[in-house]
Image (cartoon, rainbow, N blue to C red):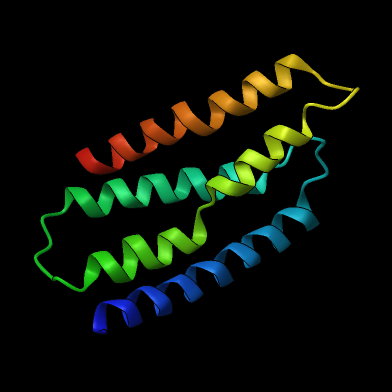
Length: 117
């Protein structure tokens, strides 16, 4: 029961952080390509790697921070929906490929770097 509460609390914090980043990005960037999702996903990937790479023995940290906060912050479903939205009559293959590479490859590299710091 404690684990579920940690995940729930962390998830709420992560969702609020994501909403904050979304609001900041919408005010400062005027882009045809969604910018918020790569920012939160790459930041989240780096943070997960960093947390995994530190041999922290607290049994509550993973459900609270990795599953909860970072799970609430990052979003695979939004990435998927943004890629589907790119498949429109104005479809630009380079935007689609670049956005996919940015999300998957850079996210992996960020996690790897975080893990090895």
